[in-house]
Image (cartoon, rainbow over all chains, first blue to last red; front, side, top):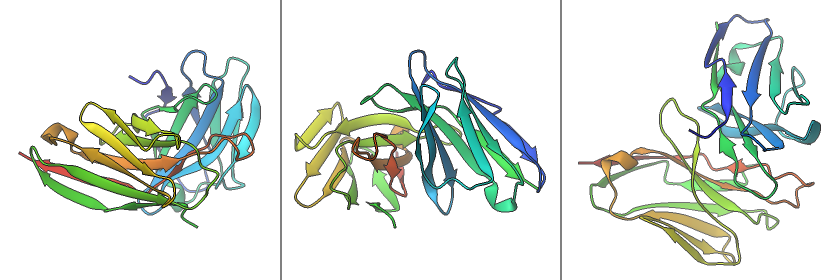
Length: 111
Length: 115
């Protein structure tokens, strides 16, 4: 058990909809990272938050947004969903200069 | 632009054999190189990691070899076991990247260890 909790485990929705993925980091970890895993693109970094502030952005679409709350949990919001957004979404957390620990992901299926 | 290239894509090894997975990177700002193991339905789990100040790191049956001049690093799994069957990802990160330690991953290697 990595200590990183992601909910829900599975999400099935339709094109055009909006969903929210939630991540609770390990106790004490200030950094939260979001990654997308798909068969063709592999694991891709989306965005990082550190203690409530956005730290870095990667290959994140404008339709996607994230935030980190004062209790350090984070949410990834995906809107105007398209078939190609179907993927596994992982959250990871870490302390500075320490390894990232991953949750078990949310599997998003767009019908 | 793929910054971390991983090979092979898949690997089949007999029980007791040595599994070798290779990675090459381009960005000389990278200073942290972890390997992750992923089982179906689970998130990536950190296996072993190395920083460029050493050329080799060993933890149990797992060894990372690092060649800074060639910008290559590899994972060796000694005495491979069926329970090692999983997908392995190499990754790289550098704190110089605007203060973020975001990981850049290779495409993964699916390892199958036959009994």
